[in-house]
Length: 560
Image (cartoon, rainbow, N blue to C red; front, side, top):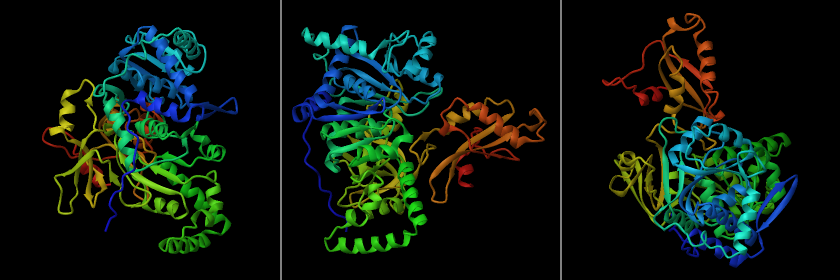
């Protein structure tokens, strides 16, 4: 019988600003952030951080950006990205995070669709934005977060202006807070070529994700902040939850630095996608095999698990050498964004680093459920937030159907898209498009209803977006993009299957596969690397189609 869900006691918050003021009152000058600059680790106290968010808010308010304006942000993970983010959340404007890896056209598409009038960015983006000003007419102010640059105002300048205004008693920024049920965070879920999908999250949605998320599972002391900040998983669950717990956030500057930063900052917890968990798992096991210790560790795990059954937990002592590879203090890995193998979660938990699998979707701010340390089911995505109702729509004889949820974390809808909003929010229930069942107060995911591809690194891919690029190749009649799965069933790469007009190919179709693969690579070259095609398959006959000439996509994919 499953254990009954035990909820943690959490301090309520009236607003994101209230959350920050609670943190300042509790922490004062205690370190809230750590990050590297010029090879040295910088510490930022909670009060200093809050003051900087105030200064940026003051400077923008004085320039006319006080209430209801949409402020975009793109760039690498950085301390100043977070200052820009919290400054906006604590005031009266709306924050629009943009994936730093998007092609310029897609970034401009989001800027225009979101009606952003200000954009925070790294120096490397300024020239592109300045040169493209005619294509993004809504942008009135470019803010360079990491230096001086022609065509942009520097972050330092805004800090100076805002500090002076604070000293003079300026209150326009402090007088404005977004109403609880109004738009606060506008998140785009894909590259959005031709069809942007802007998820509207309210102030209430964000407060609820923080409060109810911590009721289900908690985090303590110090984290390594790894995932891209435009990703709602990190922006809300990573950053905001950690601030409300008054924990130190150590900023990871690049994916290449993760392992070294684990040893530098010695985090106690980390939020990751399955690709990281798999990487950690494979590295540990490869090292054990190389040293001839794999068999010994398996025996020690068996012994350790036996002792745990009688209340003796020696995992941290037995497996200290392995844990030391992760800084020595890591106790918790929270994994979401895509399915993770039960074997990986079980291994880490067995050696003393609890790996807890969760489930979320941007439209739910983004958390729906997460496992608890005291009841960690490796095959489940855990207990749902107490603010959510769950129903399984169209369930089969095994209880599997489409997962639908209703409650405080469910989005307001899609920005400027009433039709699609009404479709996914029918009768107030958000239809996730994912298949699963809800048993003994736990949620289980069994598959995906939609065409959405989620790679093992957590990247979401809409195949139609990539197909639009491929259809630009003159001799392509039809094309379907789908995922390539590894031996464990994880979606790791992309394949394009196509039916071609070979007679109209440059060489008359003599080297069709090689020519097509090269042309596909050229067609998608401006897309992020994770959207590139690893394999092509050519068909000798047309795809099966409906009477309206639509390709029967599921029929094609299911044959793979």
